[in-house]
Image 1 (tube, rainbow, N blue to C red):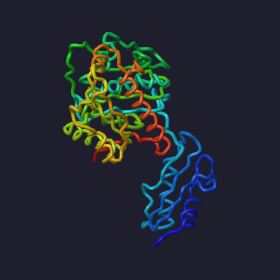
Image 2: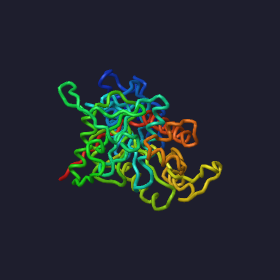
Image 3: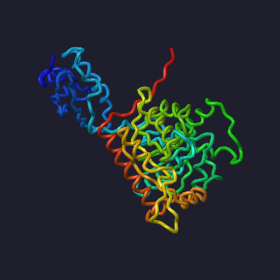
Image 4: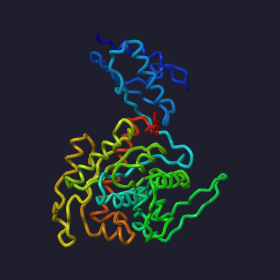
Length: 366
């Protein structure tokens, strides 16, 4: 049995927008309607940014079509949302527009270096940026910004104590590294580590931000799960080297975020240490860890390759000295991180235009 567009439109006339008290057909929200046999697809053009009813309207549309046309209709997953941006976070993150998780499947691929320089590059483009160092057991952000001796202060705001982030290079920073001595090892069980992350997120006085980056620990574990259970993550970027061993772990990171339980959009991959370029031979490229590994993985998974960052001595020196190389926007590495930041911005805008807000993960046990 096949269906006509008229059949679908008749069903959707039953879906009423709670705020405007009109059906979504009369409101002009239904666009690009196509019917191919049993498959029905269309776009919901949300007129109002941050429409809080978009998810319920989408669900009501699916139910109305199934009720009208029967269980055989193929509609689930075929409704695209246009013109909607993620719902702004509640509580202390109420003024944060986008939350980006910076993740890697494997340690040692330069994830924190990428996160630090991406934050700097976004500030250079005029955005308000924050950075949470969520690698509780191995915090490196204080070192990378030369603020190891800083200690955030508490300020009572609206009757609650808030942690005032450390600011450096125009970036608001919070890390567990600010609260422990540099030489001390954190011997914490999982619940203690996740509790620390929640405090950095919920008790930080973040204010108005365009982007809040979260530098996650390598792998897929408690910290990652706590993050998606605590906040609505706009999207994740996966950092890897081109090496086969690193790529094998990157696949796990992609799988975790894209899985049904988590369902956080993967914005793309970042290939770090893509090639080695000696300072005295700036035109030469030596593919120490392999060539285009991330590019090929991105293509295989239908994801954008957001950027390729070379292995250059100045990047390591900048991290050790607390002066990220992206501060020099005219250098080869500065340009590379600038292009990466632009790619991230474009993918975030595309994601916000075409996808509904990410749901906070609800984990239940039976």
